[in-house]
Length: 256
Image 1 (spheres, rainbow, N blue to C red):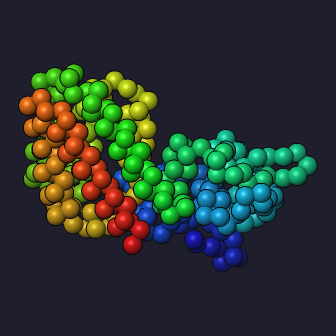
Image 2 (cartoon, rainbow, N blue to C red; image 1 turned 90 degrees about the vertical axis):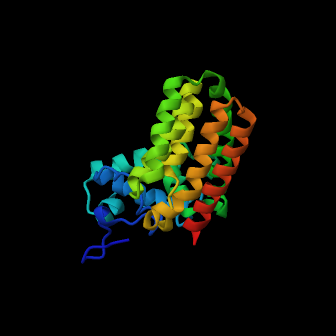
Image 3 (cartoon, rainbow, N blue to C red; image 1 turned 60 degrees about the vertical axis):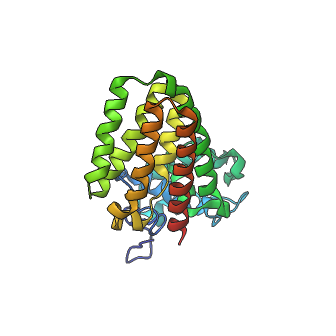
């Protein structure tokens, strides 16, 4: 975490989770209130600010982060809306227990996954993604069209030949999104996308994308062929293996 020459925290230099957050596909908006709220999120989720403790008062936040009172107030309001704190009149801003936190908020989920809260957050995310994705594929299988299969083939070709991490990752996501969208279950699809978006990829996948994707591509193609042949149970079994192997491997690599 960066600091100014006066010893104060500068929001633009905050490092929420060294290493784990560097590989995000897109950069977050560079707003002061966002930077302040995410640093406070990190402190709460990591346990630096324990449950039941008070956040520093507004004047302290203004001084530490070198921001205006409205910016500090907006940052704390975000924490309140996400369920991490309760603002109590005459007492202050109190950290709430994790059962009250909104882990479906992208910032909360991203930082919780980066910090691997409770040493099982990533594995729980993998299992949830697996359960939901299997249900989407089972729903979508009898509904897939020739256009869907053509789109999947296009994404497979990209994953067969590309050596760029971003292209491989985008084709990978697009391949799965074909059947996810066809299922028509927008709530489940949205949660899956959230989990995929916020899981930090390991540096090895970024450094060696072609080697990392070779095994994944075999499984993608096997899923595609099983669906085309009407072997839905086989497609589900391969998807289960694919997500279990790739995501668990990725989450373990990210922890090292």
